[in-house]
Amino acid sequence: MDFAFSPKVEELRGRLLEFMDSHVYPAEQVYAEQVTAAGNPYAHPPVIEELKAAARSRGLWNLFLSDQKWGAGLTNLEYAPLAEVTGRSPALAPEALNCSAPDTGNMELLAEVGTPAQQDQWLVPLLAGDIRSCFGMTEPDVASSDATNIRCRIDRDGDHYVINGRKWWTTGAMSDRCKLCIVMGVSDPGADPYHRQSMILVPLDAPGVTVVRPLSIFGYEEGGGDAEVLFENVRVPGTNLLGQEGSGFTLAQARLGPGRIHHCMRAIGMAERAFELLCQRAQSRHAFGKRLAEQGVVGDVIAESRIEIEQARLLVLKTAWLMDTVGNRGARIEISAIKVAAPRVACQVIDRAIQVHGGAGVSQDFPLARMYSAARSLRIADGPDDVHKMSIARRELRRFEADRSS
Image 1 (tube, rainbow, N blue to C red):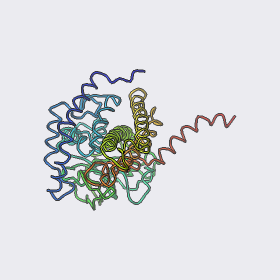
Image 2: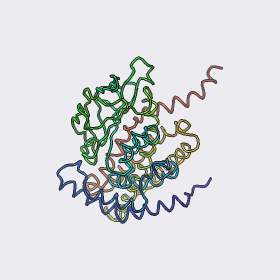
Image 3: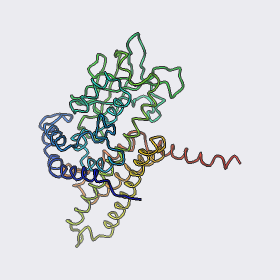
Image 4: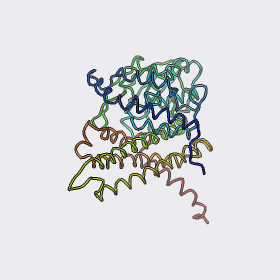
């Protein structure tokens, strides 16, 4: 088995690493200062647009989209090492490359099932980085880890649909640049549980849409934010339906497959940066008469961290390869496995780095605390760990049903 990346990927990766060193890392402090000066944690500071222009001029734009008509045309396996690099600066690098969630998943849906009119109105400006979007699926009043619980209604009324419901953890909705929400709701309550839902395009400025409040993650409020959003008799044209009526559950699964692996790729990047900070701190600090690196317990966490990162990376790469070769359905077990493994490893490595940094690790002087909050939330987002493990166990046990019956 050849573990080397192709010359095309190595060339792109080299360009991206140079961009991170020359532009992204130096911009992290600038970004924080500009957001503070704006007095709004969801502000869009000028440095982001500067980074986007620099990335675009280097050909580092829309790398996530495998559709050559709209994006870079990379496979999942080709994109994996690039997404990992962006995970090293999760607040800046993905948006700088126009590769940040939830826009990536929304753009993939629009590219795959959007009508030409929907693509002209929403996909083109999203691909250009001119606007942002959000995705309304999770609801506060039901256990949304089971998508069949969703209660938001999408009712047909002549040539229009009327949306009523409450969503939360709608990522990106706090940004002034967020113009579109893809809403998932029940359009046919009499259908079977997997064909009751549909998806529809809702402009955020439509009458009846209210961004109720921001939701913080471990106290952090930044970027496009997460919000609770209320839809009260929101009327949109029938042409805003995404795909077919009753296809919402299928579209959600199609959207979440690539979305989950992109999150996992970036989680590996977060773990790698935390690992580097851990090692640098261990080499530079002294306690009890010797460098931290010479303390046995620190050496142990360094070794464990390297082992775990490599294991998670290999599983992510295998999953990407399977998605490219046998499709998302053929890689279902692996997608669930990495969704558990990669954020877990990131949490463990970041936590160890925080411990070695002491008080500095939980302060704003290092990116570790923010990265930990992001990695920990990933163990809930796009399906909690327990749901993914349940899914893996169910599929594995099916292989032994014939033996039991005999």
